Amino acid sequence: MRMPRFITFACTAVLAASLTACSGATRPQAGAGGGAGYEVTPTSPPARGALDSFTWSLYAEPYTLDYALAYDYPPNTVLANVCEQLLRVTPDLKTEPGLAVKWARPDPRTLVYTLRPGVKFHDGTTMTADDVVASLKRQMDPATGSPWGSSFKNVDSVERTGPLEVTIRLDRPDILFHELMAASPGTVVSAASLSKEGKDYGTPKGGLNCTGPFALEKWAQGDSITLRRNPAYWDKKLAPKSRSVKFTFIEDASARSNAFLSGTADGGYMIPSTSLAQLRTSGKGSVLFGPNTAAADLAVLDFHGPLGDLKVRRALSMALDRKNIIKAAAGGVGVPAKAPAARGAWALVPEQTATLYDTLPEPVHDIEGARKLVQEAGAEGRSITVVTSSLAPEISVVANAVQAAGRQIGLDVELKTVAPDAYSSIFVDPKARQGLDLVITNGYDNTPDPLEFYQYLRTGDFGNYGNWSDAGFDAAFDRANSEPDPAERAGLTAKLQEIALRELPIIPVYEAPYSVFLGKRVTGAPTGIAQLYYPWAATIGAAQK
Image (cartoon, rainbow, N blue to C red; front, side, top):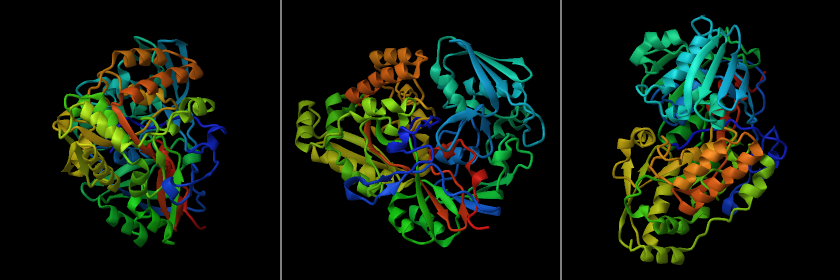
């Protein structure tokens, strides 16, 4: 249930006054359309003691634990605690050194990373530059089939230039590449283990040999994944407070909520929106909201059908009743999205957010105007297929709203229901998109830069699911991605935002904060979307001494 990736951006006190408050600050927020208020804060209260173990609920079983193929919430939620990157994103949405202690850019096309000495893999061997080179080159190998491969599109070479030094040379300046070293593209694993595990790497049959605070103990396919504490973990500040963590997979939203209420699951991220009110008042634990860069969007998958006409895309956007969608899909916790990349993604230069994002107009809701556009396009009665799934209740809610809106303006909107794994396949397998016009996505950034989101609309990019192409957009992106000054780059990114809003290859729907449920016996978890790469399970411990 995703589109582009995640976040490693910096927040300052200026951003703390925004929708996604950072730096430990909280701020009450009113729900859309009069929904319940909420606060956004990057962490839960710190742990007060150790735990032998805790159980964490995922909304689906990971389809892989291969870092190069992990492109969705479930696998990244697990891997965040097992494998690490050259850089690290923190709960307050800042980038700091990870497995690289420092880096340098001697010229616009060269990056030099100095690695942290003495870091051990889970098997006790020591990390070297050879492991970094093997890990990054594997992302670039077409045989791997990595959805992150396009992040390396400008990479000429990855070389070991010292026992603890890696030099990357680019064929053109690429500002985003370095930032993505804090996400899956920058993951480092044991080169020896990659060779040993072969095709079983990242599967229930294979092992993982990384550097994180937890190691993979067991993957019981269809049932659970268990991690055990790594006693030799290098970062003593993040020494795990629990001996083990068990992940369970519960696809049904009601069953997942019942697991929280009964205590069979101690916690979980991305709470079913249909259960927010019940869980918040249950007395069985706490629902907390954290910083988010995600927006619920509609991604066009086929530009050869009715949605190839801009008038039809505009009409469908105008027909959406976003405020009522937020009530039904997000429990009233959210706001209508003004652009494909969420407000929270504009954290690179937060002082510019008010100018570059807040001044955007609110999305228009105009049924009559939308109906006229459909008539002008000659699209009355034409069929549009929207894919839906039980993967998350929000998907079916939005899909039904799109169907109702489309039919109001003269479009024949059909819903195609697919299994959760088939829905996830849409984002990694082009064949899975055949016969589909629209998919509901949760689009988010991996970087402190909104430019990273708009990267995925470039011609030929892996994240460009509908193969949309606009020469002006591509040229504007290349200009922005070669601009080293963050303030100047943000202004150039606003031009991309403008084109995306004009052409609507993605139709913005709504934004909501990240959510986590913590049962009464646990605390310490980061609350925001940073959990996809930060070793969040290490900070969870007992709520009472």
